[in-house]
Image (cartoon, rainbow, N blue to C red; front, side, top):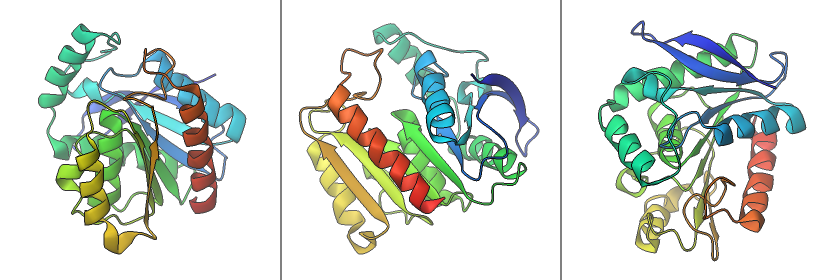
Amino acid sequence: MGKMISLTAADTHHFAAYEAGNPESPRAVVVVQEIFGLTDHIRSVCDELAGHHGFHVIAPALFDRVERDAVLPYDQHGLDKGLALRAKIAPDDLMADITATAHALSRHGQARVGILGFCWGGLVAWMGATRTRDFAAAVSWYGGGIAAISHEKPHCPVQLHFGGEDDHIPHTDIQTIRDNTADDREAVEIFVYDGAGHGFGCDDRPSFDRAARDLAHERTVAFFKENL
């Protein structure tokens, strides 16, 4: 359904992105990749949001900063390489690419843009909500690392989804996020899915949990429709 396009950040960095949906749609979302790149799963998320729910969606290839066209397998090798690539990308560069993607959507007429991230992208979605003012709503699925910066205040409503059996994100991290966002309970929603592990929303991973995925997806779409 979608197509590959090229975008340019403020520092003139050119990067690829996957675009799906009608540019005339009143709702737009930036979808942020996992640690594995612009996988078929991430593209399918874009296609579903566009085809089933009418969103205009763009997913930037964040690894293009250090290695172009990097799409990694869902195994230990892919994880190790993804972590190594991520370590080479400065947070300010991440925000530059996310902002450029949001602005690309805005140029099509969408005044209110959302951001949805998975895994590493879940952390980036939180950063997009707290470190920029480009987004009207942010959703994170199993975003590792949020606890460490959960003292940062979001500039838009945020929805966070975690697996109750996530071996990468302990319950202590989720509690830290709850504690640090206690004054923003109307702005930050947190959902924990009992029995679900890390990556529960990806049907290409052994941890896929259909029930948790479907409920998180339903909540995500409703949240965006309410706030965009």
